[in-house]
Image 1 (cartoon, rainbow, N blue to C red):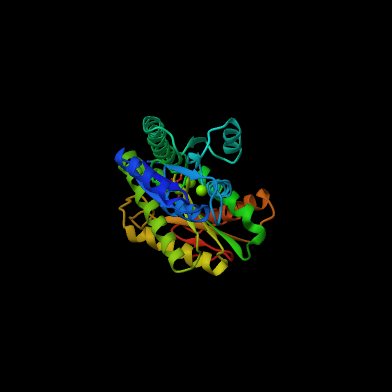
Image 2: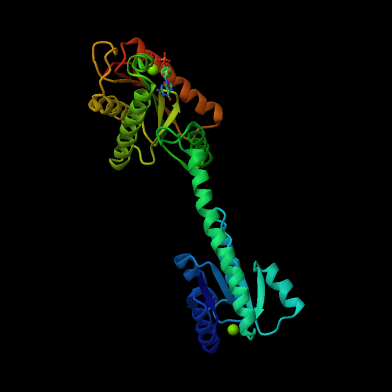
Length: 320
Ligand code: GH3
Ligand code: MG
Ligand code: MG
Ligand code: MG
C-alpha cells in the first residue's frame, strides 16, 4: 500500500513515516495541502493521511481538490484520513463533511495505527482487484468478441459523445460502411471457422488502415467498428469528402492486399470489400442527423454492390 502523508510538522512526518515503513508500507510525504494535491495526481496513492492546519493550503481545501480531481476519473475514491490533535465528535463530523473518510489522532497508540492501516490495506487490495475487474468488464462490454474492434454499442456511445461535444466542433463527420463481398459463399466453400478467421484479418486491416489515417492526419480520432455480421464501419470525425474518399480507397486496397483466397468471389479469387461513404457537416443537430449519415453511407454501399463490388462509392458515385 502506498500512503501519502501530509503534514507541515517535520516531527510528525518523521515519527509517522518511521512507523508506517516499519509496517511494510510505501510512504511519500507532502508539507502542505497544495503539494499534496500535486503528489496525489502524480503518485496515485492508495491512502492519504492528511493534517488539517497547514500553511499554503489546509487539509480540508486540499481534500476538496483531491475529490474534484477524482471526479474526472471513473470509480475513483481514495480513502482520506484526517490527522487531528484531538479526536472530538465535532472533528469527526467536519472531517466527513470535508470529503474525508475518517479521522485519527496524531498521537494514536501504535497498535491502533497498525490495526487501522491493516484495514485500509485490505480495502486498497480490494479496490485494485475491483479496478482490474471493472476494466475487463468495460472491455467485454465495448469490444467485439471475435475481432477485438469496437462493437456496435461502443460505436454508438462514441458517436453520442461526439454529438455531445459537436457544438464546439467545426468541420465534418465522415463515415464508411464496409461489407465483405460474397461472404456467404466464402463460408459455404471454406467453412465458418475459416470465415471467422477471415473476419478477424479483415478487421485488423481496417483497424490498421484507420490508425494510419489518424497518424497521417486524414482524420484524427477515426476508429473502426464491427457494425454486425460481415459489415464494418469507420467513423472519421473531422474528415471531409476528400479525406473520406481517400480513406475508402485505402480500405478497399488494404483488404485486397491481404490476398485471402476466395474461390467464389466473382473473378478476383480473393476476399474483397465494397464501401459506401458519407459526410455530414458538424455540428450535427441530433440523433436523427446521425441516422441520415448512416442511411446515406448505406445507400452508397448498395450502389457499390450494384456497380460490381470490390470498390468504394464516395459522395459523387464513381467506382475506384
Ligand atoms: P454481398 O456481396 O452482397 O454482401 O453478399 P454476402 O454473401 O456477403 O451477403 P449475405 O448477407 O448474403 O451473407 C452474409 C454472410 O455473412 C452470411 C453469414 O453467414 C456471414 N456471417 C455473418 N456473421 C458471421 C460471423 O460472425 N462468422 C462467420 N463465419 N460468418 C458470418
Ligand atoms: Mg499542521
Ligand atoms: Mg452484408
Ligand atoms: Mg457481404
